[in-house]
Image (cartoon, rainbow, N blue to C red):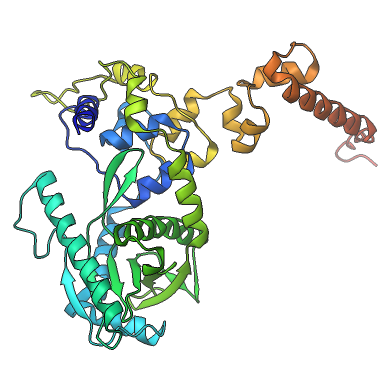
Length: 399
């Protein structure tokens, strides 16, 4: 417990005086897609605003939800949850054949029955305790009496260990079916047009939902207590009419558990950093940043990054890290980086390929592969016919 308090204190010093940005399913999904990135792990654990940090150092993120999309999503979620989730229960029954009977409804979210509770961490602890009690009791009672109605819980607070740090998570809904099986329900604002949704958005929703499934399975202590098919509720076509579909997340669960096990513990990452490392985005009384762009850039450079092109769609700091990695083999993709283990720069790779640089002991295999590739490429080029040269263009008015 003392060590945990020390870790939290160090994370607070790194973040500074600003309000922390809490981990969520999206950040966990992004972190586990690149588990070797110590920079992201520390920033997420400390609650640093990566979007604001990217803007301060001159490399603002190129993605994010528009205010219009956020408002539209909130309106759609309220519609689906209205009147104790009447619309959701209809969708589950009519579109998915999942009948919860006369289901009870309970709001465990920040705006629900615990809204007037303790603030900050104490409030989160109270919500988590209430969620654990409610979900455990509902699953037990539903399993004991399958003839009884189900239950729907709005924004329960779950927790998951991520690199030695307890992370709070809020699925949109958890539905408990008669018989005791729980279903994660996620409400998304991206549309389903002619029966098809954007593949990338569905994939992102699936891995985020898998985070909730894993957290709920660990809470209940039984994998079979939580269905591996999650429910996505989206607008149909260009209307606000909701449509529900099931998505199998077994593959995402396998990947998630494997990647979570590979994460280096946060306290171990912090032990390798200087005690005075700060990434404070606060401003003083005159509105000037406490730390300027140069100081923030220097501090970021002390956090080991593991850039890959896929970061551009998942991490707010990706453009900064890409610039930092210019000329390195990491910018060519994870496959290239793994094939060229030990060859850090593109210049070194070209030197090894053309024999102008002698390989180190740990580069011998990569160097042999590069030389073979360069030789085959040269042979193919030599076998191609020379390009024909076009003749001179006729003069205007000529014959």
